[in-house]
Length: 242
Ligand SMILES: Nc1ncnc2c1ncn2[C@@H]1O[C@H](COP(=O)(O)OP(=O)(O)OP(=O)(O)O)[C@@H](O)[C@H]1O
Ligand SMILES: Nc1ccn([C@@H]2O[C@H](COP(=O)(O)O)[C@@H](O)[C@H]2O)c(=O)n1
Ligand SMILES: [Mg+2]
Image (cartoon, rainbow, N blue to C red; front, side, top):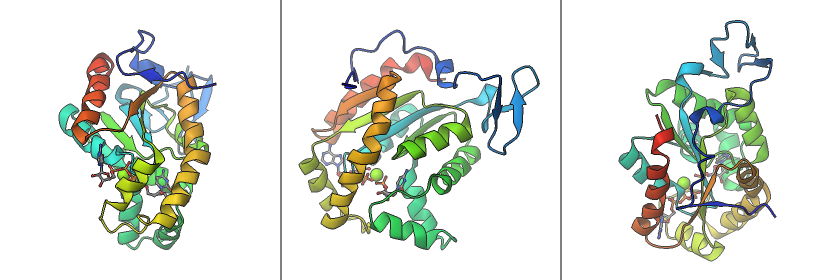
């Protein structure tokens, strides 16, 4: 019922204002520190972005092995985006022996979702430390809980959402062929991740489809063939990317 995907080559004029990314202004809101700011007062920030510096955000979603990371690297190079992979940030946290490292490792090994507060803290730290106003957030949000927490904490929605649509058998083949030593690249965890994708991640994609933000890209084809479809999305969105 919700499959009214926005397709490459059929961009609508509705989809034109970067300001549409800012959540409808309530008379007041809490920022991430829990500080109340009012529209008529002098709110310095909306969430953790200042009004002037609200970045362009693309969420990049798709099942395990659909090619999110591969395509993000190419988008970053071609269009000057900063690529933040939630999975990479969590893996970095494991290797840095942080207090949450053991919990994150166990969660990833089980193919489950790390609590939103932990992941958002890592994303936020990166966004605040990088001087760019164009971000690809790869593999986030993975659940409605992730999405709602991000929007509540930052006060913004993504400008666009890329969804790499890939058949399960192709995703399994790609993950098993990846050979990067990831603890979750084994058939047992992949099966669990596919279930989690269907149960928790698809509702997020459906939500943003209803919001008119999803670009569904057929992820089957060579890396370059898929990138040509991605390129078309970003070329068409040039006006709204500052
Ligand atoms: N279009 C493609 N055709 C064939 N192989 C691909 C394609 N895109 C990516 N791959 C390969 O598939 C594997 C998975 O790709 P990638 O890591 O980009 O997926 P991902 O969506 O980020 O997965 P994950 O969610 O597990 O991090 C990699 O080995 C990559 O080189
Ligand atoms: N928002 C997220 C993103 C990832 N995870 C965990 O990391 C695993 C690997 O993520 P990739 O994006 O690199 O595939 C994923 O299966 C989750 O266990 C998460 O919890 N929350
Ligand atoms: Mg990845």
